[in-house]
Image (cartoon, rainbow, N blue to C red; front, side, top):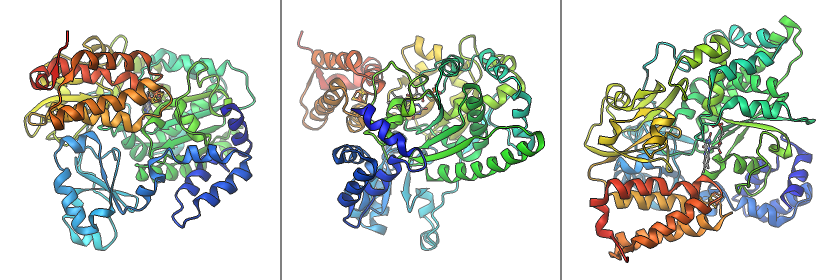
Length: 552
Ligand SMILES: Cc1cc2nc3c(=O)[nH]c(=O)nc-3n(C[C@H](O)[C@H](O)[C@H](O)COP(=O)(O)O)c2cc1C
Ligand code: SF4
């Protein structure tokens, strides 16, 4: 069934994208949504139910969302910063309570009090000046720190000369396999969470015969607390574009797609601008060297769905299908967008490639540890004295990042959630023993993930934090598999009953639920929630014990 829909969507391709048409029709507020979807159904020869099923999935296309004026961030860092009540009061005073909606993490975790208005992201500080509101200029000043602890930073240096920068393509055009060898020597592992070696994916796609192939950049950075992809998209977009072009040359693809979450409108603007600059460089390079090479970029904006960060869900979304997770194999490297071989990587993964080719794979792999090479961007939230984006050499003691680079926290904190909603809850005293690399985290029962760090204040109830996590998973579950679809809702209900009505949770039942979700879920959204929850039950037992009882 989805194969047929995929084929129908492919007929119109990326320029007449079904996904774009669906989001356009779904955003209609003039009462014509049904009619528009019917027209689409005829144009694309697809059933109307399929289109309805896709459009009803996204937060931004829901009627409730469309009627709002201002959207408060409901991400974890804004929650733990304790700003919600104050911000809501101010916004309600200005716009009216019924005009306030919520969106998931806006990537302003450095402010801890962000909201979106007229497609601009702001923080509470912007509101202090009434002039700003009157001028309809809500653009937030980005008051956060940028730093590094390595003498060979990969991302921090600015790019001044684009001709020289893109000129590296000339050095590799005669023998692109050299680029693949450098990437292999660098031992770069994907930065989107799973840490899979990039060169293996590239070789698989390169060796798969097909009339078309695609390169997709996963810029759906949905992990609350992480805003390093946002920083790269807005401040270093050419690192990403060049990384994607080189990937295309290696696997034999001439089309790149950047799927940017709808909560990042500034990133969309910055990337579109950079693509125009790239197109000029492409022409200049072609004129200078006669190099027959052309690479086309397409930017797609998400419509509010965390699960679209999962690679197969993202591909379904791009195809205009309901973005449910697909079971694998086949993996995207052989069967991706429109069923064609596709390399889909995280923003930061692509952004590493230019350094690797310019400085050499060995130079890159000399950074970091035996199994976690290179550097990692880390995002620190507003609890830190120096919140911001830090490029950290892998293997660095976490203590150094939290206290030397981040300046420690402004108020007492009991734990950090690191690596997004499915990342571990690391008590402060344990954080002192970790190093910032994949293995150090995994060996201690945590997850480095995308390395966004959210502080949990001393006085923030752990029960409230767990409720937030379960609510997040139950809301964002794509519904494809029942352990996650039903389990996340049951977990939320149990915690809510305990928090609000003092109904004790049967601990054995709760453990069974976590185990079922962990073992039975199709992807890491349902499968991964047990990690932070078990961390909390383990390390914060004294706080949580009163809500649980043991039956055996
Ligand atoms: C629930 C869920 C959400 C995810 N969200 C993201 C995301 O926002 N960005 C991302 O790059 N990868 C995300 N991933 C991982 C992707 O599925 C995929 O592994 C990754 O984009 C591959 O790129 P990499 O090899 O560069 O890491 C998510 C995975 C899951 C299970
Ligand atoms: S675990 Fe949740 S998000 Fe993942 S496939 Fe199952 S229902 Fe969908």
